[in-house]
Length: 152
Length: 243
Image 1 (cartoon, rainbow over the protein chains, first blue to last red):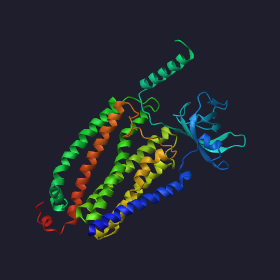
Image 2 (image 1 turned 90 degrees about the vertical axis):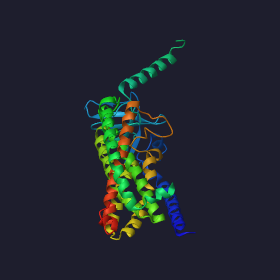
Image 3 (image 1 turned 30 degrees about the vertical axis):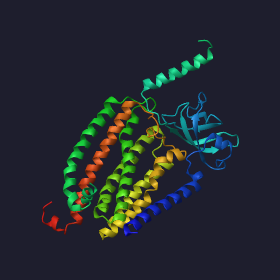
Image 4 (image 1 turned 90 degrees about the horizontal axis):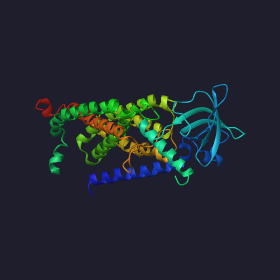
């Protein structure tokens, strides 16, 4: 074995060991690396329910209600399997919309309502011009209408 | 053919070649940059949900790609130097580090400015953002370590080991949005499926990415020439000024 082969083996072996080590560490800290918990995880009590944690999912369509004080909002965060009601007082980010992703930070109250102290909008990876978005929505609505009216 | 290629591993042979390539890559970077910015601002449509603020992707995404890719190239050169003991390899790694660090800063800062209007916050400690910040520290640590050791060969070896250890971070950055829940969105462009963005947006982004490549090559070549002259200042070919 020439010295440079030995050094190559050391570099490759070192990298492999390092990779395995990193994989084990990341696996061990898996639960600490998640940025938010989904409603299903909260329902299964996987989230630290007695502490502040982040809840993430979609704002359910039609669930957003603004109270008369103009600052407090109630909405429902869903992952389509489970729903968690959320209440928040403060300014919402521009991209906060029904049917869009959201990440909220706060505590789960004894009544099952999540009291958020911070609301962040989570953007998805789709980028399209408004015309394309309208066309998609229209196609979706027409599809839904067709399925409601048989024979049309 | 390979014996010819290995000739360029000598700093003396590589120096004039690098000099000839700089202007070519530099002009390519300038032309592609102008074309990319034109598409970005005048051709690409407004985004349906984000409005105009999405245009950050034309600089943010190429910068983030370059920050990761340059680290891999830098670590590759460093590893090559460690295995083959070639003199030029360590110089190449040193030449790439500042450009990589710059692109990391650009990715982080543009991300901050985009995050406030879009997410509602400048910074969160999610896996993607944290690992990209760690990448900046790796670049800075690599440069600081090399500067701290006077003997160039020992500096190259120490830097190479640090660079190789840091390689672990690159797949973590790239796959963080798949492996864990993050606030940062998933990849819009990947090799395995169709991109989830309008064609002109994608075109602008790819042209800008190509411009970033050309810029990185031009700047790294210019920097490696400076490093060659500094390190070989006692060699006959540098002193005689025949370069």
